[in-house]
Length: 358
Image (cartoon, rainbow, N blue to C red; front, side):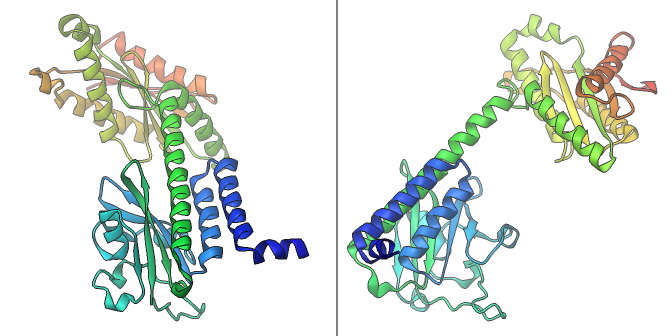
């Protein structure tokens, strides 16, 4: 106990301990939120703010969102967004510079609308924001997010402690970059390069999960197997580059026509599969018919000076009545697709019901 007390009494040893704990967090987990929380906990112990938050930048929307914050759950923060350039955090994100504001009431950049409300005493009394330290998380000249410390003891700050805070921000930026790199790697392993859709490997994983969930909750799900009609003619007449572009456009079109909870996969060649969670046979048939009629109206390779039409054969199967395993359900849907392929093409067939005349 005495040795442990001496560590915390010695500023140099204490700082080394903080770095050790942060480095251990960076190397012991791939979970971004867990790492960021570990870093923020070390920052909290060192600077002792009354509250803190870590915001990440949504580059597409030019907004900051709360990734973690003291006294809040993820659900509490889901709707809180800060436009870049607004409030203290938004200013820091826009300029990539740190701010130390001793009295926020005298700073025109402070806007209480862009602060996560904190119940200080647990009885509904909000925390009064007096001071703020706000620092950007930077990597490769890009701002990834912002760390905001509220009501620190500013009288204890020195050039050394500010430098120490910058180092911790660098650690947080490393954690974010590592997490994004890992997400990208995982995305590449489940994504088809040509279309950007999920690949067959991910289809099998998703279906295994869907079967387990359907069995547990006694629900259904359906599969639509899609094979493009006479697609070889596109490659023969216009070349494989145009063919690949049309496949990508068809995949994007299918994705845009189904629900958010549905998944679209490239099964191989000119074949696609749509997975419809919690959807029975009638609902799946209606979805397949909608895809069929909409596909007839679409034109492809327009940017290449073409207006190609694409038709497809659709097969529908439902768990558990048409199969109780991944391969059984795919085979059932595939069989229905070939029923269409061998007769009219450009139509839908449903397992247990046969052809849908259109």
